[in-house]
Image 1 (cartoon, rainbow, N blue to C red):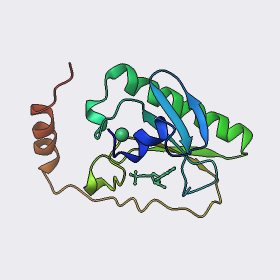
Image 2: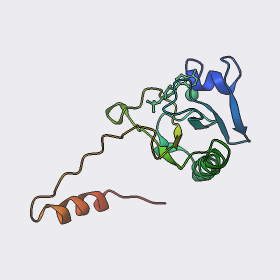
Image 3: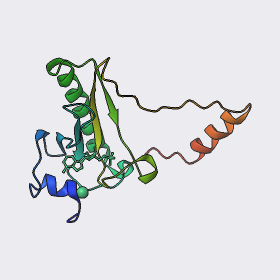
Length: 139
Ligand code: AMP
Ligand code: ZN
């Protein structure tokens, strides 16, 4: 897609610091990292949502991201990593070309995801699960 910033990165029209590339995916350093080494893994084909990425490409993204995470732990002396994918504006997706964040983490890196923990009202859990399951299509 010609106006997409990540398509431009893949095509070399916008510079990036490449970490990995194959026929399906491209990985490069995030320009505004949570921690140094923060990497984005993207499909070479333009997809706004992760839900339309073909299975082989999506699987490759996950594999590459995990391997990059391991390399970060070993070579950047980090303690762990987060894989993060925002799908849709409401989820915080800013760039509308699907991307998987690989965020290197240190025990004392002073970064906190604001992950809240709600409690289900009595009897609500099963109904929610049924609604999701009723629309679930895995082909
Ligand atoms: P998200 O909020 O999940 O859509 O994340 C978009 C990410 O893309 C942000 O972390 C940005 O820092 C990153 N980003 C935007 N433009 C560039 C760029 N030209 N090169 C590298 N990373 C970028
Ligand atoms: Zn794109």
